[in-house]
Length: 375
Image (cartoon, rainbow, N blue to C red; front, side):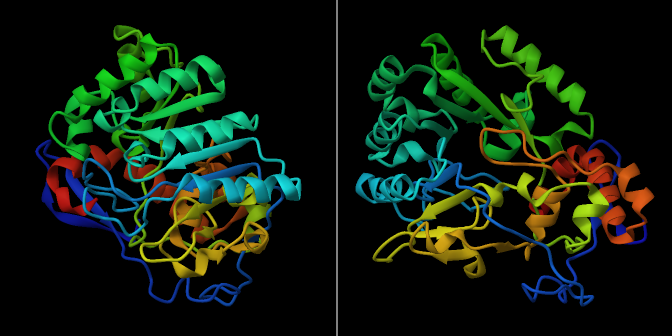
């Protein structure tokens, strides 16, 4: 592929690690049209089914490739309060939104002391709650509150635990030495106490072999009595990699027909996220969980203001959502684009990205060892 150049070093495996071409600076400049002058695709809000709450970007660990740059020192997104969350829940209810799930993400959500109260509010309204967590000490600090919620609301509460790989070495490469063992302790505690558990992994560590990745997770879950079906794409979500500095094609209105996809399959058709910026008087609503810092995706202070269409004017829109087929909520998301479909359509730009997406899977494992700063 002419747009992927070989790296100048090899990994410990002896494989040559390739690097993708940097993003063309002419792309993603105009929300209405692409660099080629074509009409950019946008997605209308079909109905607010999932509301994400960012509890704050502070985290108990620092990962090598955190899309939101969470760490013990990054408080760019401040702790949101239970009262502020209640206001958005009240607004959704008054508007008759078809809200079925509220997801909590961070940072590490359990660092926010209001999280148990927020969960109780959501669950008490008959809405399902999803918490994304690394299942370490911050979660265990709320063990009593979690057990009370589990006893009262049962499987309406789901905890999705981040476990980047089924082997400790690769997980710890991303999250720090000993992280795998600490997360497994939390995961086992959740399992022993009957919580509904999902797991999130990283597809890029699978060398392009999803079946082998799922088999590895299945063996791990069996060994530790973790009740997660590794074959279920919702119970075990394997997320594609995100790197906004890599060149990707822009998604045009014609791409829906080329790919055989509906805009309604993207998460911005059914979800929004509430964030509270450090120093801000009140929270704001952004288009999705992946773009908390980009001002063009801040849609307003209320859910009503944030109901307008979202232009797919960011590399993540193409790679993660449209072609990657990923979604952050409790559904599997759109199907990833298939190479054969794109070839038959004759769309060179999309074929380029899909080929890169498939090829890069096979390089991640070597890249992780060869160039730690690259990802």
